[in-house]
Length: 226
Image (cartoon, rainbow, N blue to C red):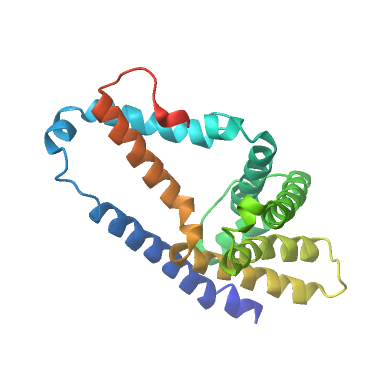
């Protein structure tokens, strides 16, 4: 079973993941109205690129935007969750070994202690985010079962991976298989669910920043830090 899910099934997962993301990006770009204000876009490209970069930077840095500053606790939870979500899967030593064995790709790794700290912090942040969605009426009213399902899909690989690495729960093979399958489910979900924001964030935020930068022609003061 392990050979199957880390071999053919992993290849299929990556193919769907990469192909699906490519299609979503293509569809997003194709769907933009390039004819709108085409004169301004053709003559103010430098301002547009600068605006896009500033907009993305303001939102990708903790407390870099006004939106992050008004909710400091949520901001800390949000970035803890996403830093763990990105860093641990990419730089965990066990994942690097699988990539080397299956795809021949060499990859840098982080110490196991750092991976454990980030994993626990990410899981705790995810739990608090769920509690926040339940506890706050203004958030609960816009939260559906679909949102909780996505959070569960996102947290599952980390919980099962932690259980497997530290041999908790008594059955190492079960947790290892559950971890790999949960990780593949999460990757498959990215192109087809709200998890697409892992790429869509850069597209939408860059578009907003570019649009503002072009139309304002580099004027100081912008909504890029909203």
